[in-house]
Amino acid sequence: MVNGAGGTADAGDKKFITRRRFILGTIVIAVIGAFGSLLSMLKLLSPSKKGSGYVSTIAPGDVLVYASGSNIGTEIKAGSLNLGDAELVYPKGKSSNPANLVQLIKLAESDFKEPTDSKLTDKGFIAYSAICTHLGCTVSWVKNQTSPDASYTECFCHNSIFNPARGELVEGGPAPIPLAQIGVKVTDDDTIVFTGDFMGPIGPQV
Image 1 (cartoon, rainbow, N blue to C red):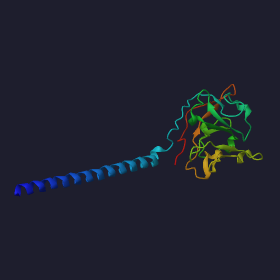
Image 2: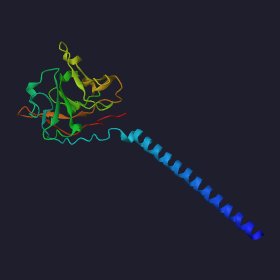
Image 3: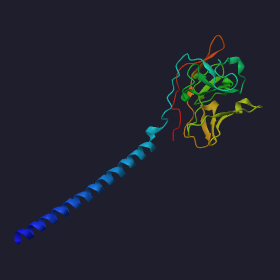
Image 4: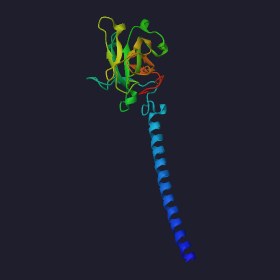
Protein backbone atom coordinates (compact mmCIF):
# COMPACT_ATOMS: atom_id res chain seq x y z
CA MET A 1 0.00 0.00 0.00
CA VAL A 2 2.73 2.40 0.91
CA ASN A 3 4.66 1.57 -2.22
CA GLY A 4 1.51 1.95 -4.27
CA ALA A 5 0.74 5.33 -2.73
CA GLY A 6 4.30 6.37 -3.20
CA GLY A 7 4.16 5.30 -6.81
CA THR A 8 1.01 7.35 -7.33
CA ALA A 9 2.62 10.38 -5.69
CA ASP A 10 5.75 9.99 -7.83
CA ALA A 11 3.63 9.84 -10.97
CA GLY A 12 1.74 12.97 -9.89
CA ASP A 13 5.02 14.80 -9.19
CA LYS A 14 6.36 13.85 -12.60
CA LYS A 15 3.20 15.12 -14.30
CA PHE A 16 3.44 18.39 -12.34
CA ILE A 17 7.10 18.86 -13.25
CA THR A 18 6.43 18.06 -16.91
CA ARG A 19 3.53 20.55 -17.00
CA ARG A 20 5.64 23.22 -15.28
CA ARG A 21 8.50 22.71 -17.74
CA PHE A 22 6.07 23.00 -20.64
CA ILE A 23 4.62 26.24 -19.31
CA LEU A 24 8.07 27.68 -18.60
CA GLY A 25 9.27 26.62 -22.04
CA THR A 26 6.28 28.32 -23.66
CA ILE A 27 6.95 31.53 -21.72
CA VAL A 28 10.66 31.49 -22.68
CA ILE A 29 9.80 31.02 -26.37
CA ALA A 30 7.27 33.87 -26.20
CA VAL A 31 9.83 36.18 -24.54
CA ILE A 32 12.51 35.31 -27.09
CA GLY A 33 10.05 35.94 -29.93
CA ALA A 34 9.02 39.31 -28.50
CA PHE A 35 12.68 40.29 -27.96
CA GLY A 36 13.51 39.31 -31.54
CA SER A 37 10.64 41.41 -32.85
CA LEU A 38 11.84 44.36 -30.78
CA LEU A 39 15.36 44.03 -32.13
CA SER A 40 14.05 43.92 -35.69
CA MET A 41 12.02 47.07 -35.11
CA LEU A 42 14.96 48.89 -33.54
CA LYS A 43 17.15 47.88 -36.44
CA LEU A 44 14.67 49.37 -38.90
CA LEU A 45 14.62 52.61 -36.92
CA SER A 46 18.36 52.80 -36.29
CA PRO A 47 20.62 55.41 -37.99
CA SER A 48 22.42 52.63 -39.84
CA LYS A 49 19.41 52.48 -42.16
CA LYS A 50 19.86 56.07 -43.28
CA GLY A 51 20.21 56.38 -47.02
CA SER A 52 19.72 52.64 -47.38
CA GLY A 53 19.46 51.63 -51.02
CA TYR A 54 20.84 54.92 -52.39
CA VAL A 55 24.27 54.07 -53.73
CA SER A 56 25.49 56.17 -56.64
CA THR A 57 27.42 54.69 -59.56
CA ILE A 58 28.56 58.03 -60.96
CA ALA A 59 32.21 58.11 -62.03
CA PRO A 60 34.58 60.87 -63.17
CA GLY A 61 34.07 61.65 -66.86
CA ASP A 62 30.43 60.51 -67.02
CA VAL A 63 28.53 62.81 -69.37
CA LEU A 64 25.37 64.55 -68.13
CA VAL A 65 22.15 63.81 -70.05
CA TYR A 66 18.59 65.05 -69.59
CA ALA A 67 16.54 62.97 -67.16
CA SER A 68 13.16 64.37 -68.22
CA GLY A 69 11.36 66.27 -70.96
CA SER A 70 11.49 65.90 -74.71
CA ASN A 71 15.32 65.75 -74.70
CA ILE A 72 15.52 62.87 -72.23
CA GLY A 73 18.69 60.83 -72.74
CA THR A 74 20.47 63.45 -74.85
CA GLU A 75 23.65 65.20 -73.77
CA ILE A 76 23.27 68.59 -72.13
CA LYS A 77 25.11 71.51 -73.68
CA ALA A 78 26.32 74.23 -71.34
CA GLY A 79 24.99 76.93 -73.68
CA SER A 80 21.44 75.63 -73.30
CA LEU A 81 21.10 76.85 -69.71
CA ASN A 82 20.71 80.50 -68.74
CA LEU A 83 21.27 82.06 -65.33
CA GLY A 84 18.71 80.73 -62.90
CA ASP A 85 17.95 77.62 -64.96
CA ALA A 86 18.13 74.07 -63.67
CA GLU A 87 17.66 70.59 -65.13
CA LEU A 88 17.28 67.09 -63.75
CA VAL A 89 20.09 64.97 -65.19
CA TYR A 90 21.64 61.50 -65.10
CA PRO A 91 25.10 60.25 -66.04
CA LYS A 92 24.87 58.87 -69.57
CA GLY A 93 24.08 55.15 -69.66
CA LYS A 94 23.30 55.00 -65.92
CA SER A 95 19.72 56.20 -65.74
CA SER A 96 18.42 52.93 -64.27
CA ASN A 97 19.86 53.80 -60.85
CA PRO A 98 17.62 56.39 -59.10
CA ALA A 99 20.52 57.30 -56.79
CA ASN A 100 22.23 58.89 -59.81
CA LEU A 101 19.57 61.57 -60.27
CA VAL A 102 21.14 65.02 -60.09
CA GLN A 103 19.93 68.60 -60.27
CA LEU A 104 22.21 70.73 -62.48
CA ILE A 105 21.94 74.47 -61.82
CA LYS A 106 23.35 77.57 -63.55
CA LEU A 107 24.06 80.56 -61.30
CA ALA A 108 26.48 83.45 -61.31
CA GLU A 109 29.81 82.37 -59.82
CA SER A 110 29.69 85.41 -57.54
CA ASP A 111 26.54 84.00 -55.95
CA PHE A 112 28.30 80.98 -54.48
CA LYS A 113 28.83 81.25 -50.74
CA GLU A 114 30.05 78.82 -48.07
CA PRO A 115 29.61 75.94 -47.52
CA THR A 116 29.46 75.56 -51.31
CA ASP A 117 32.63 73.89 -52.58
CA SER A 118 33.59 76.16 -55.47
CA LYS A 119 36.17 73.61 -56.69
CA LEU A 120 33.25 71.38 -57.68
CA THR A 121 31.71 74.08 -59.87
CA ASP A 122 32.61 75.32 -63.34
CA LYS A 123 31.49 78.43 -65.24
CA GLY A 124 28.55 78.91 -62.91
CA PHE A 125 27.38 75.30 -63.10
CA ILE A 126 26.77 73.54 -59.82
CA ALA A 127 25.13 70.18 -59.15
CA TYR A 128 23.51 68.41 -56.23
CA SER A 129 21.68 65.18 -55.52
CA ALA A 130 18.04 65.51 -56.59
CA ILE A 131 16.86 63.10 -53.88
CA CYS A 132 15.41 64.86 -50.83
CA THR A 133 17.17 63.94 -47.59
CA HIS A 134 13.83 63.75 -45.80
CA LEU A 135 11.93 60.83 -47.36
CA GLY A 136 13.53 60.47 -50.79
CA CYS A 137 11.18 62.47 -53.03
CA THR A 138 12.62 64.14 -56.16
CA VAL A 139 13.24 67.83 -55.57
CA SER A 140 12.06 70.60 -57.90
CA TRP A 141 13.52 73.89 -59.04
CA VAL A 142 11.71 77.15 -58.26
CA LYS A 143 13.03 79.86 -60.56
CA ASN A 144 12.75 83.52 -59.71
CA GLN A 145 12.21 85.13 -63.11
CA THR A 146 13.28 88.63 -62.03
CA SER A 147 16.17 87.65 -59.74
CA PRO A 148 17.90 84.37 -60.67
CA ASP A 149 20.02 84.44 -57.50
CA ALA A 150 16.80 84.17 -55.48
CA SER A 151 15.84 80.87 -57.11
CA TYR A 152 15.82 77.83 -54.86
CA THR A 153 15.31 74.08 -54.61
CA GLU A 154 12.15 72.72 -53.01
CA CYS A 155 10.77 69.29 -52.24
CA PHE A 156 7.04 69.58 -52.74
CA CYS A 157 6.31 66.36 -50.84
CA HIS A 158 6.80 68.04 -47.46
CA ASN A 159 8.01 71.54 -48.44
CA SER A 160 11.68 71.28 -47.57
CA ILE A 161 13.55 74.27 -49.03
CA PHE A 162 17.25 74.29 -49.94
CA ASN A 163 19.60 77.17 -50.85
CA PRO A 164 21.69 76.15 -53.92
CA ALA A 165 24.10 79.08 -53.58
CA ARG A 166 25.00 77.97 -50.06
CA GLY A 167 25.61 74.28 -50.49
CA GLU A 168 21.87 73.49 -50.55
CA LEU A 169 21.57 74.30 -46.87
CA VAL A 170 18.12 73.54 -45.48
CA GLU A 171 16.16 76.76 -45.06
CA GLY A 172 12.77 75.27 -44.27
CA GLY A 173 10.86 72.04 -43.85
CA PRO A 174 11.72 68.68 -42.31
CA ALA A 175 14.83 67.72 -44.34
CA PRO A 176 17.59 67.04 -41.77
CA ILE A 177 20.67 67.80 -43.89
CA PRO A 178 21.59 69.56 -47.17
CA LEU A 179 21.53 67.87 -50.57
CA ALA A 180 24.98 66.46 -51.39
CA GLN A 181 27.08 68.39 -53.88
CA ILE A 182 28.78 66.66 -56.81
CA GLY A 183 31.54 68.02 -59.04
CA VAL A 184 30.90 69.04 -62.66
CA LYS A 185 33.04 70.47 -65.47
CA VAL A 186 32.30 72.00 -68.88
CA THR A 187 34.35 70.36 -71.63
CA ASP A 188 35.76 71.91 -74.80
CA ASP A 189 32.81 70.68 -76.87
CA ASP A 190 30.33 72.35 -74.46
CA THR A 191 29.13 69.10 -72.89
CA ILE A 192 29.21 68.74 -69.09
CA VAL A 193 30.81 65.86 -67.22
CA PHE A 194 30.97 64.74 -63.62
CA THR A 195 34.34 65.01 -61.90
CA GLY A 196 33.60 62.53 -59.11
CA ASP A 197 30.90 61.14 -56.86
CA PHE A 198 28.72 62.89 -54.29
CA MET A 199 30.54 64.64 -51.46
CA GLY A 200 28.03 63.60 -48.81
CA PRO A 201 25.21 61.18 -48.00
CA ILE A 202 22.27 60.90 -50.41
CA GLY A 203 18.74 59.67 -49.93
CA PRO A 204 16.57 59.80 -46.77
CA GLN A 205 18.47 60.61 -43.60
CA VAL A 206 15.69 60.30 -41.01
